[in-house]
Image (cartoon, rainbow, N blue to C red; front, side, top):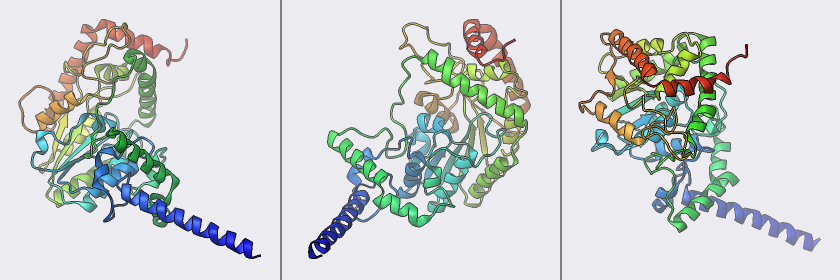
Length: 388
């Protein structure tokens, strides 16, 4: 009996000691920036990852942990393209809070979370083409439900996970390893993705994954066929909160490669130039709200596809049909900062009609001037069309 009691006591001490060590390690490393303590080490800042598995958690930790004067919101297009150290933000500490595959629904949530923690001077809120005309959904395959962004999560369970969880411990160990090897994480301490790689075979990726995704997007929009009232309400809340808190707000429609834009027409989308989305944004360009539109057939957006060989050939400005490079992101931020140029147009109720006509004409010219690329698009889409 005494031996059993000694064993039980040893086991209890072992479990408690392991829990204490796990707590100390996780809060010291603070891999997702969600458990700041007096002993959390700033030496790990360059090595804390914002990976896909814990994307929402890590970006929420970034939003709450820094002393931010400005922030960028949007999808992975923002995460990859927009440098928070651009001169637009000179004199301000800016965070890139772009979330992978996020719609307005999640972007509104992290915007609200950010505003609850800070009093910023500037917010850039990016909207992807078709987002406003895609139905709001509460179904989410990401870590959103486990992150600080989820208002319905059990706070005790969540805090225990951050301090004692196996997943947190694994992230802490990975962070320590990166520091020992002096290999910075894939994102900067401001949340900007470092050097997003070009795919090995860009043409193949475009023909497969990205056009398949576009087909699904067109089908969803076509079935729904209207502006989503919930998303419009969320966007209006962003506008109202910035206005109330005297924060400059820039809303922008993100660009996509011209083949993405032409695919909507090829697939029979009833609104292939996103007129409804644009008009809704133009109507909100009032009382100091700036709306910028970068989605058109500008030469940057209509860059010709790379040759099929070698397979390593790639576009200069585009990682795929959706994601522009930081070079393009800098040009967009230049325009917002007041630099002259012909990339991007301010949308208002006065400019919207002319803008729509320019887009129609530009895409028609792109179709005519790039017959090889259009043929590639049509052949790639054939696999997704109904068979005769």
